[in-house]
Image (cartoon, rainbow, N blue to C red; front, top):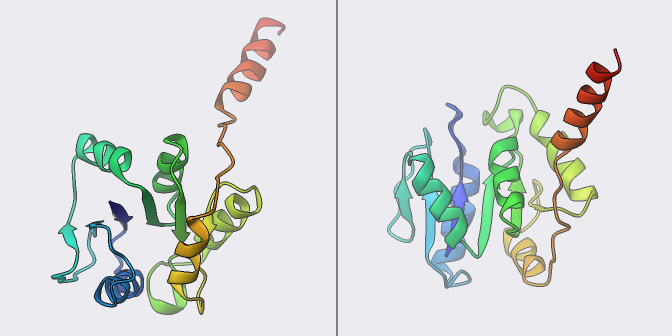
Length: 159
């Protein structure tokens, strides 16, 4: 199963869904596709559409997915990485009215450069990135949270 995640942002992200729908119609994607579409209105006979899901259901969907295709929201990307999933992140772009600015481009650039994810960039064909994902081994993601906590603990203990 392929999980497509659009998150909870109020602006629509039909560009990604239109591309995934095309790949289902052309029979490029043979697996079931489940979409968490949030505020994006999109009807599909090819994909299972879910507006919002509970935390528990989203956790289960991430676990069951062979591939995550997601907007470049930090939480959505990191959830996939923590679960050791192959993630294709897609930045919502201001020029298409998908976000207020282009900050998601920075996230995908950093995570892609570090070898954690693949990115579908504007002007590219999504099937090329999906083909790349078939041979991609994501570099394991390690949060800096524990290191930061240790630095703070050491500072407090020695203050």
